[in-house]
Image 1 (cartoon, protein in one colour):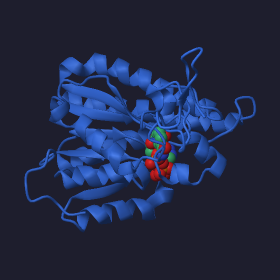
Image 2 (cartoon, protein in one colour):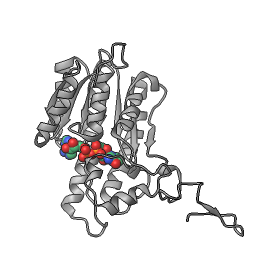
Image 3 (tube, rainbow, N blue to C red):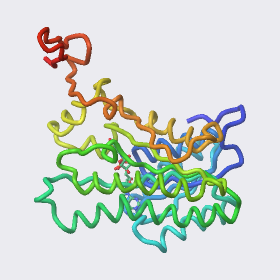
Length: 282
Ligand SMILES: NC(=O)c1ccc[n+]([C@@H]2O[C@H](COP(=O)([O-])OP(=O)(O)OC[C@H]3O[C@@H](n4cnc5c(N)ncnc54)[C@H](O)[C@@H]3O)[C@@H](O)[C@H]2O)c1
């Protein structure tokens, strides 16, 4: 990563990215730093080596970053995280609430403990983060928050019931909080990534990976950088009239009630049934 010589959108600004030890969070932390922002990298203590690597990637390119170990399910941790940003850099101008976990299983078979953990990280973690970020942003007169929802926050996804429920709830929380604080100069939006090639997805069985691409016209995994670009736009003044948006970055997956394979990515080998005029996948 090379720091820009020109002015960046986040020059003189500071913020936090949760779940920044890898995947989408690391890509976003690096992108904020490339645009001049000072970044607090938040992730679990157990991920310290990976989180410190994110910090190293930023500082070795001339950017500014620190790691603050944080469990987003614990209010005291999240409050301390926000305080650390302000004590270190003076303000909390942007926040990307991105930490998340995925556990798969049929709805009737998933463990109660797994259900509770998914809700704690993916839903309560986002609410706790917004709570302490908003309180700080009110004190300083504004800021921008971007939550990571998911394609699974917009449509059902087999084998991911609690995750889908948590991400749908993140969509609702985002829209509600966005309306509550928009006139206090605090803009809140979310990204809804589709299938993105990160450790969360790389580790899934091949069959599950294949099924993720089925609803998607582009029929490829997205990259963490493609999500980071959208997060930066939503956190920057370039999106100043965007409030409560849930921005899909999913290769078209949620915009089509259709199933695609790599061979039949439409319209090349879709055929039209002459009698009914329906397009049929082949
Ligand atoms: N990869 C995808 O296809 C995809 C699609 C849609 C949404 N998402 C969402 O994007 C976000 C980032 O996921 P990713 O794909 O980069 O996966 P990832 O597993 O690489 O990143 C998730 C990060 O969250 C951290 N984390 C987990 N529990 C935490 C906790 N209690 N406190 C603090 N940090 C915690 C993990 O340590 C990890 O670094 C998640 O919210 C995920 O649900 C991912």
